[in-house]
Length: 175
Image (cartoon, rainbow, N blue to C red; front, side):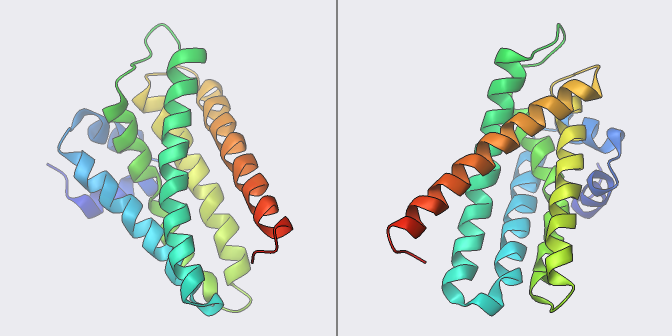
């Protein structure tokens, strides 16, 4: 069995074999959730200069975003854009997308002046690329394009919801 750290590195390197291994190992679910928690904690640390409330908010929002994105990806990928060999079991997708959250650990560097604003978008793009590989492998897609479409649809819905939510809060005088 491959170590947790080796799996994180393999997933960050977009290694297909790592995603296949994680997909097939039900015991990797706890590891995948740990990667998501670590990524969420890093997001919180990266926003530490904004204050304690933002640290907590960044942590919670990162967790909620991952759960929502995983659900949307599963829904779109298995119900609307499935291929003949698409697997509908949520476990492999949770494990694969959990490890795909690994590059989010870079978000811990988000509070570094000058570099922080460049690091966070890099982390998000890297996680998107990792998510595409994770989706392709977990759902048994033959086409990377389909995995991109499924991942982007989930991301667009998620970010649109987030921006509408933030707009409502701001319009009500929050933040």
